[in-house]
Length: 216
Image (cartoon, rainbow, N blue to C red; front, top):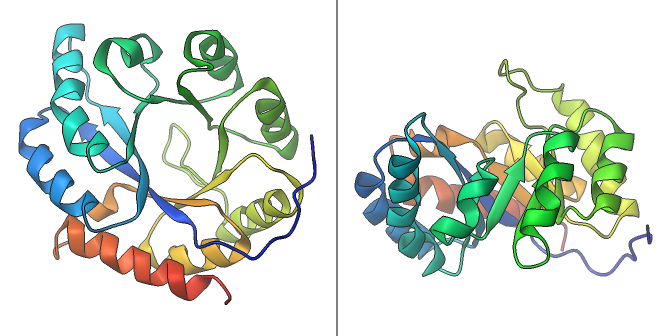
């Protein structure tokens, strides 16, 4: 894999992770308004448990709100629903899921790699054809690596590899440090949907922290 050259640093873009979505209609207006005023590259849509038709309708209801803002809509897993709903791709939970999904997603759609336990896992995912690697996301039990370890992994990746790195922020307080470490994208956990100021205000706050975290 080619080493990354060191041009002037660009401010990372946001990558928003939803809570499990069961009823999309109530979200569409808020999402559309928030995305219109923030530099969000992608929304990772997590789906609540439901029958297939309900899931398809749920995704389709949010496609215009997200894609009309120039933002990619990714599904958390559910590779079989990507093409049927008009989603832009999927985020895969581990190396096995990524390997299985790549032939169905590439080259037209995005395949993101998560669940990367080691540096070796991340390199294998990139070499296999993942469009990005994600560091710092919680595991199935909600446990994240130590924040210092996430910063170390992000810094290592940003210095060496061309494939973009998504760094998962567990709070707004982590955004600036992850940006400074070299992340290409900052994933905002579902806490932004619970922010008492509203989603748009939470994203605006994150954008300000991104700008502050990247050296001029």
